[in-house]
Image (cartoon, rainbow, N blue to C red):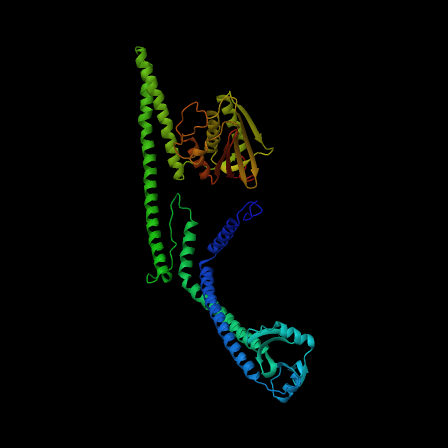
Length: 501
């Protein structure tokens, strides 16, 4: 493994990129107020930190220069060749902490320092350690003395080989600098806290119109706009849509957009109603001519003088008129269901309806295997028995028509809580996922995954959904190869009303 590879095979730069990307994503997930506060407070904190660092550096240099001056002035001590360091310090008035090492040919090397109210002699180890730590090429330097701490020292040579090494403690400089930095830190922290509070108030008030826009948009988004009569009454308050501000212009633009959307939805609803009335009227008007065509074709077929070609043509006309009549009847039924008509409510024994519908389907599709799965108690609900019978019949016809011979079709009915649940399951090829979303739309006939034996109008499942929704229920489909289930859920009333005779 190369030296620049991570143990798990990932390059360290990749790990850093992922870490940076995670931090960026977390920052983006924050609210706008939080991001603004972090950005502003962070920038101000960096600026104040840089100012504090610069101030501390300058103050350190100034205090260090003052201390060097004090050390140099104090180093001008004079003593006799026979004096020791303690004698020299006792003769003068030195500030507490002053340290002196004096060396001459007569008295030798001695050291002492000024304590609070007396002069204390340095040990030989302290003297030797201090002298070994001093750089002879530098006049002033900082050294550490065992037991006494850090000192700023200055060495000055005298006559006859004598020398004076005098030092002052740096503790006063360190304490002064620490107090200054502590004060700057406290002031900076207090200023940042105050800045955060002020920023929070200002940003919150400034973003109030934007929150009103978001709240209005969320309420509009929660409304069902796909179908039916829709009225969008939500608007951004006038106080939050002042066009003199950027966010106010957003609120005003959203109000204008909602006005346009509301007008478009009203126009769509009017067009749907006109189309629904047109389909209903056209279907109703077409029933009479189609019945006439079918009647005249039947009457003409009874003429014994018809040639074989004429009879064949009349039979085709009759077949197409029957197909057209079925299509017109389905369209008329859909139009009336969408208008809330065609339903006659009463007590319906859905278990009996299922048994009868499966019996009819078994007679029509003897090449399929039909099964019923019912509970011990009958499922009773309030609805239109003829239309619910049509729902079950259409689902069974759909399973019979679009599955090959030998397919097992199972019809299950059970009461789950306050709902009657009807399931029609088959083990056929399944529904093509490409058309699953359009399965309940009108004229949906793009089912390529099922073997189509006969043609249909493409309205069967649309009628099923319309009837189910008219009963305040819902229908869904779950399909996979070998496992397709249509599930119908209807509100059930187990005790009231009583089953119809």
